[in-house]
Image 1 (cartoon, rainbow, N blue to C red):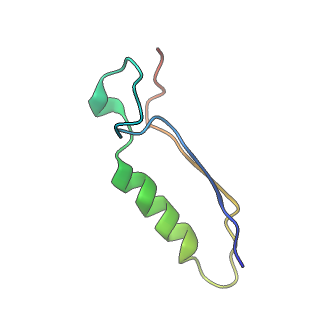
Image 2 (cartoon, helix red, strand yellow):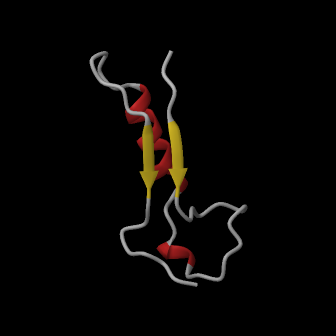
Image 3 (cartoon, rainbow, N blue to C red):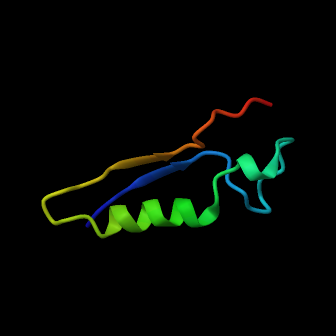
Length: 60
């Protein structure tokens, strides 16, 4: 069994209501791709934490 904690930063979904330019948010597909990469990692690797952050830190 693999256990992975995923900590996405501000992601462009309807749940995010922060006052920020929407194009600066992480795309949901980017977060999904990071999760898929962790799930499909080789058997000799265990990724336990994934932090997905925007390339540029946002301030609000």
